[in-house]
Length: 470
Image 1 (cartoon, helix red, strand yellow):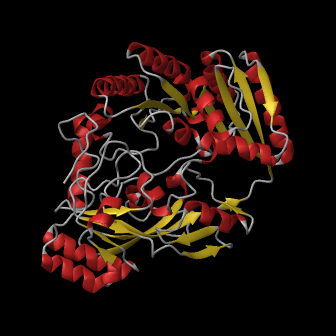
Image 2 (cartoon, one colour):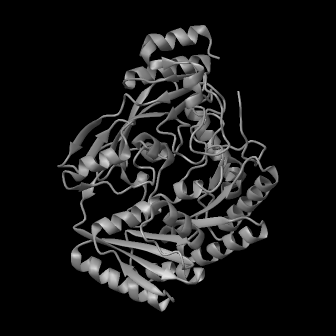
Image 3 (cartoon, one colour):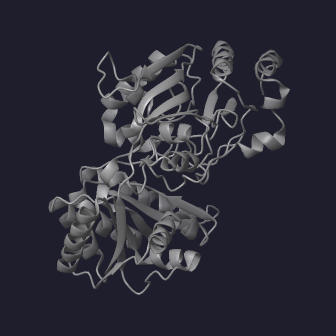
């Protein structure tokens, strides 16, 4: 529990209405969307502005109280689970769109802004913010930046880091810095903006962000390519990219995923095929038409049994919504759902899909595979039950092999979910000891007392997903 001195100082900053250390409130923020991780914070604090954040961090740094910045808690790496107690910092009151600059094509927001709310606001002006994580209806921009969130449109447009132009950040000692700006070019010193993007709240607290916007695409079309062979679907992905076509969206769903998503969404998805590619292109009408024709021909050459083009935007949106609902649909099957995001080069998609299937069979598990196939980011997902310890052991072993294979194929252990606590035991597989040491040196320089989201990114001894209680 917090020392009474610390408690009183924090209340003096944010008022009693914005400080809560009741058991109920602490329990609400003791976990995020990651299964099998839970730990009670000592208090939940909701600052109203940057000045209050700075004062909170000064006190916590002085008394070495852990700080966990938190958005909506939708992350899947236990990134916002307060595994070492301390304070959960909420941004529900720092949730304003501060400016939409149509001359410079930027939007400036506070960290608590809901992603989809911001997208709707800029689209009303004919502008476009491409990053579209599946959780965008409830996830916040601050959380997106901390996790460097991806999304369905990442293949063509990139991920969150590609749109962050400037940040206001409070450092652990309470200093406030500004990085970047509304500039097309800026090489004045280290690129601190990119350093903070994806840092998972381990280096400082983001209190404001300026994001790049682009003009709204003129038109878009969506199609489904159906396959009776998983490898054929995976090869189609590589063939489309090899033919120098970069679609907006190139998503992969295997049959187990199709079945549970269709049962959940009931929009008429085919469930009698082995795999589906959900493909979307946007841009000028003539380019969209040309690319869809070319991609359809490529898919047919790669043994697609059927090509279906959405007849309307309503139908296309239903398909996109169904894809975004894949995790929710699978989560209905069993009490525990483990969703991962091993990523490989696009050219290795077919090998990775085949390996996932072989590993699932080896460990007698049902693993649904879907994901952003166009950028190599697959989401093998296992419905299980944490109370079945023997099965959980098999799940752990299976995913360890999946990560190992991804690295062998030139990939990584996570493409968009982050490291947090869940992937920390595997990070050295990717970065080696020297890479870990370099990252720890950066962490120490910014946060010598290790108050910022401690216990994340850097591995401890265990490679288990465990429940941590306090």
